[in-house]
Image 1 (tube, rainbow, N blue to C red):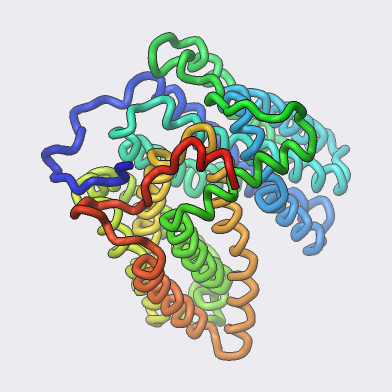
Image 2 (cartoon, rainbow, N blue to C red):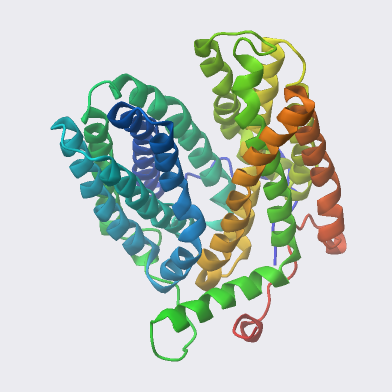
Length: 443
């Protein structure tokens, strides 16, 4: 099984087009990401205006993040059982009226707090299915050698939409009750139109590429026991893949350090913090990872094709730790530059990891295995936020950046060597050989 053979820049498929199906898919996904950025800002601000309670704002934040921990594993089973396009379609159709109704109630001044919290959870739950299905759908829209370019295009666009344009637009619309939800609903509707156009396209990467992957015959039934069996099958495959375990360990450790850093960043930046800046300046510094991420998305595929996945991992993962530690330098330019470079490195790592998973995990298992991977790397973020607060309380804010950087540096330098098998015959591999069909069906 090939992962990322080392290539020269000249041999990379730079002249190959990603094609109209991918562009339609990309427009649909980015429209949804823009809507996500709008309502992720609008919802907490609306909660604050309705209640004036920090507890309610916190409840909305929990409701927006809880589905990733509670639903991503069963979502992987659903996406593997059904066509990814169908899952994206029905989840998007469920999400659209939820956002529209919340916007109408907010505009009319009839939105109770409990409905806002419940609506936030349901919207995020549908988004969990949409995002996981989108990652399963992408390898069916482009050829394997174009996956790095496709992922790089998506990563840079998603960073721009979800971290720049969406939050900025949401902040402008937040003072007008219901308008932010209306704009988000319109954007989600545009995403549904894109999915409809994609489904109607003929050809090898159009509608005919979108059905569910063939499954091995199994016992009848689609109940909880059947879902649990399917989930165990995906988890068993994940456990046999040392490369995926290693990537998850590196990503999870980096996310712990990054969550601690971003949680304590306002304490460091905003007066009376060490940098002594205003709240508006904090917004500029907090946007630095997105700046680096957008720029990195422009070259991520070329670098991956030129140097290979192992080299990208070996350089970028430890470098993230150095960037986090550099935030402790007590100057605003240093904080901005360190976060911008960190954001670029993380996008490069995400492009490498996503392309690797999409090109090496069997299609019939992809969503389940991917859900296990994402559950691990996303579930540690609250731990990082908590550790950041404790370290800052005991040792000072600068210690958060230094210790987080040291943790990410050590994990990035040591975990790949400990968990990945040597590359056979000089090829640049991250993964072990693909198991046989019999191995896929037995725990």
